[in-house]
Image 1 (tube, rainbow, N blue to C red):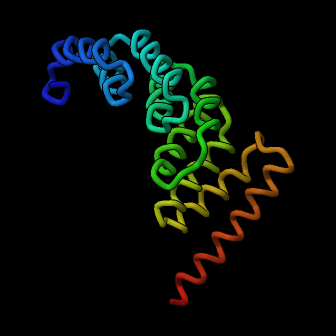
Image 2 (cartoon, helix red, strand yellow; image 1 turned 180 degrees about the vertical axis):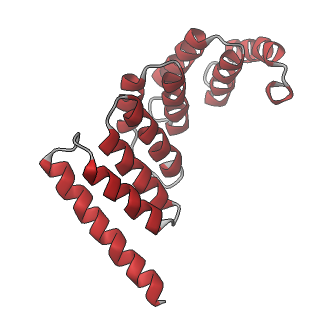
Image 3 (cartoon, helix red, strand yellow; image 1 turned 45 degrees about the vertical axis):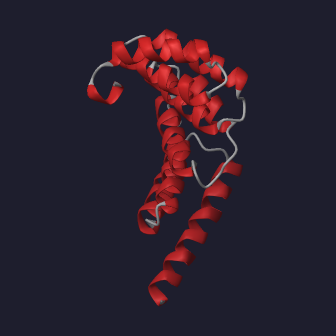
Length: 167
C-alpha cells in the first residue's frame, strides 16, 4: 500500500500489525516509513527509537533511523548513530553515504569527503575515491592524525589503481 501511494491506509494497517506483533522489526520499520510518508516525522522517530530499544543490534533499523534523523535536521544525532553501527558488507555503502551526508550537514567537509571517498572505493570507483581523498586533505577540519590516516588511505588507493591498470 505504501508504495502505491496509500500511506494513510498502510499506516492504519501497520499500527494494527505492530500492536498484534510488537516483536517484528519489519513491522516497526514499515510503520515508521508510513509515518514519514504521512509527514509525521516525530512519530516516525519515536517508532524507530522503540524498535531500537527492542532490537538494538538491528543495523537496518539503525540506518533508517539515522536517515530519518538527517531528514528531520538532526545531523548530530544521525552522525552519532551512524558511527555506532558496526561495519558490515551488507550495509557499508548505505552507511558511508549517510555518514558523508551527516558530516556535510555538520560542516565537517573533510570528514564528508573521506566518507564519500570510502563509499566510492567500496563501489570500485578508485579514481573518484582518490579525488575525494585529495579534497579531504584540502579541508581545514581534519586534525594531524586524520590527515595522516587520509594520506595513508590515499596512497593505498593509488596503489590499488596501479594494480588495476597492470591487470
